[in-house]
Image 1 (cartoon, helix red, strand yellow):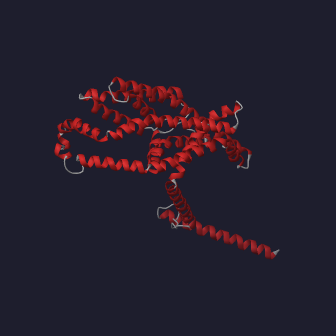
Image 2: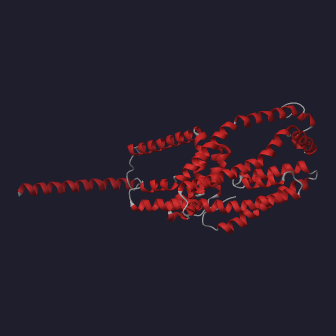
Image 3: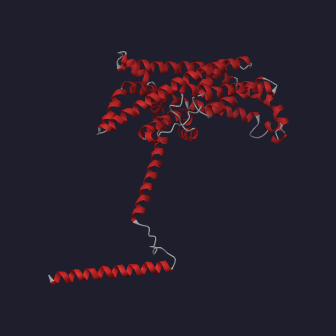
Length: 388
């Protein structure tokens, strides 16, 4: 008992001494104007591990996108086939409820896609062939028509001598046009290969779409996770199907209006202009910009008066503006929205990665990503506005 009491007293005296020492340190720090003695900042092991983790993520991201760019010949048609298959998902489900077998659904829908692509290519074949054949004459007519206008713009310092010598001469322009045709011809074979991969991937994706959905859902071990996967997949099908069905109807009407504008304003091949208006509208921002500039150039080559020359471009831009900002939002409502700045950055990125096809895929991929995020984080669901 005496030993235990001695030990207890020793511990009490030690705690009292420690408390007194701590109190003196605090009073000394207070005299120096500090609340606590400041501990030295040491770069710990945890900070290094965090930095290492972010470095690994950054390296993995760089390698991933490098592979995406390197494997573009295969990934472009496969990704396009998956996106088109998801867009046709609602139609495939409806055909399935009518009793059509899976292989029949795949054959019907892939054949319809092939038919649409064939009709568009057939409609563009003759005008493009005419443009190639009449290329030199077109360049000369453009030179004769635009030269007086450029000479009046003194700040440009352009004269007929500019187009007689140097890189802007007629010979150089014709030579460059020949080089462009060579590039197009050399790219024809990869385009055919990608087309075959696209249709094969689309057929197989439509055939195994339900089985692939089931595999993705059953890959999650818990019931709540499987329900989340079902909700995400259904939301992706609904968003892509409803958006592109609505967009196709609206842009088809825009193509008809553009055909009438081209016909009324005297532009050649008005049906071709309507088709260009329909296709370019599926690429937000860039499509409308390129289409308006092209119509303005065509009007300048057709009419001498500057106001009459720019009238078709002004009418097309005004109609497109009304459809995108009034009609399209009224039909779509505010169910799915995407930040226009995010879509613009996505277009720039995928155009840099995959060219023109990447620009077309930027909006569908953005829709898929935003749909997944909104379903995984419903409490943070914010509706970005679908741009045109």
